[in-house]
Image 1 (cartoon, rainbow, N blue to C red):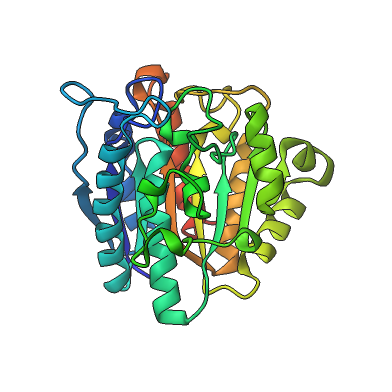
Image 2: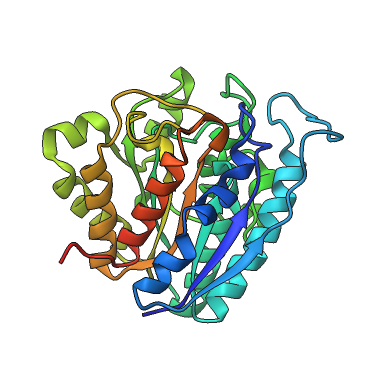
Amino acid sequence: MKPVHVIGVPLDLGAGRRGVDMGPSAFRIAGLEQQIAALGRIVLDCGNVPAPIREGRSPGDPSKKYVEDIAAVCRALYAAATGALRAGALPLVLGGDHSLGAGSVAASADWVRATAAAPLGLIWVDAHGDMNTPETSESGNVHGMPLAALLGREPKELAITVNGPTAPAVRPEHTVLVGIRNLDAREKDQIREAGVHVFTMKDIDRLGMAAVAERALAAASAGTGGVHVSFDLDVCDPGIAPGVGTPVRGGLGYREAHLLMELVADSGRLVALDVVEANPTLDIRNTTAELGCELALSALGKNIL
């Protein structure tokens, strides 16, 4: 089994509600490192990627607030995740808001492209599409834009790959959204036009999580050199994950979320994992961070038997 390198990203510049920058600490307080070690894996906590706080920073363009500062954090995360991959480890990135995905996914994409001569598969597990652009966003919050940037759209500041904005980090045919249930009106058009695979909560209700997970993994694995999973805890129902900034009723249940991650582990395709958007200021006794730790463990191979 690969070693696991834990990388914290205390970033809340992309979110509308404050407090998600404390997410990495909440995961650590929940005992994540010790629980990974109990699986028999070597684990190294690489500390946090530095991230500025809002006080003293200007939001800049209101259609993409703090985008330059966010891009700088994503570039630092890209370097940290690339270092973990070069060391033969699996990067486990703890957020922080989901805008960090622009850096973590780009690192995986460039690594797989360089070592396997193949593209990266991406499974984006989220209540939201995160495919807004500055033109379509109703809030200007960048945590709703990273997947658009990874697919080669705006904001171009988040094009972190070594090949620059002319080479998208991921292709739509290798990109899968799972758990979607809350989209902005214009974002729906963006998603339809992009050609990505989408499994909404309606699909999960109709097909069951086992079928959806298998289809998602098949799409993300076809012709790729591995799969990056980026898991936003707001995909889970607020009843089991109350500590998120943008809760939406009707999300994944406890076993549905675990089954998805267990099947990710069974696939043997996991290259890197993000667990993001835990906000301790909105949580109840660290419930959401503890759930995030449990889900990460399932993705890393923890079995019931």
